[in-house]
Length: 105
Image 1 (spheres, rainbow, N blue to C red):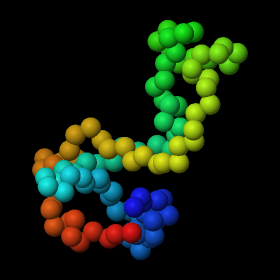
Image 2 (image 1 turned 120 degrees about the vertical axis):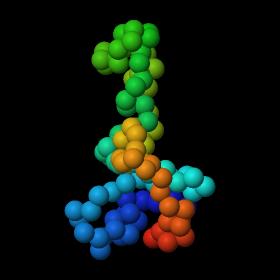
Image 3 (image 1 turned 180 degrees about the horizontal axis):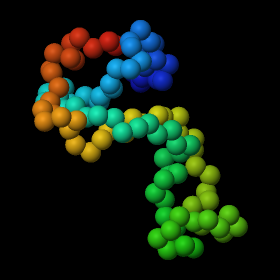
Image 4 (image 1 turned 30 degrees about the horizontal axis):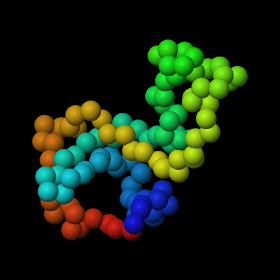
């Protein structure tokens, strides 16, 4: 089962909007990170595909060229939560018990 933006909203709608949000992952050895931001790209290739055919190491900006940069990409319907690089505090670990007490969709 996949969580949607709507599922997430429903799970946190009763929480104070000023509360800090962190990402905890890896149930067997939980690590926590502060969030840096959210990415909602139109497709997976939107950031980082470089064209060696027409622009070397730069993203292709020539709409008239026939390189692979301009091939139609499937729409990406995902939203990505981006974690900060490093722990938000000295203790980077979450609690294993959170997996049992988590609000689930």
